[in-house]
Structures are given as C-alpha cells and as structure tokens.
Length: 55
Image (cartoon, rainbow, N blue to C red; front, top):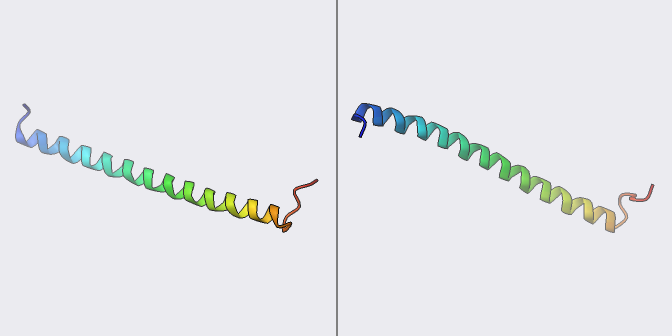
C-alpha cells in the first residue's frame, strides 16, 4: 500500500481525469440529442413538403 500522501495524489489525479471524462460524455450526449432533434425536424420538413428532397 502506498503512503497516504501518494494515495491522495493518485486520488486527486483520478478525480480530475474522471471529471474530464464525464464532461466529455455529457458534451457527446448533448450532441447526440441535438442531432436526433435535427433528424426529426428534417424528416418532418421532408414529409410535409417544406424542403425539396428531389433534385
């Protein structure tokens, strides 16, 4: 078992890395949500004829 001071350093390092990963996951999830909304809106506009999907 490493000394308490080293354990604290390791814990701090892991906490920072974990927080960064969670932040990246949150940003990715927001992007996914946005793209789903965009997809739904695009399909709706195509079906209702608001956009021309034929060349």
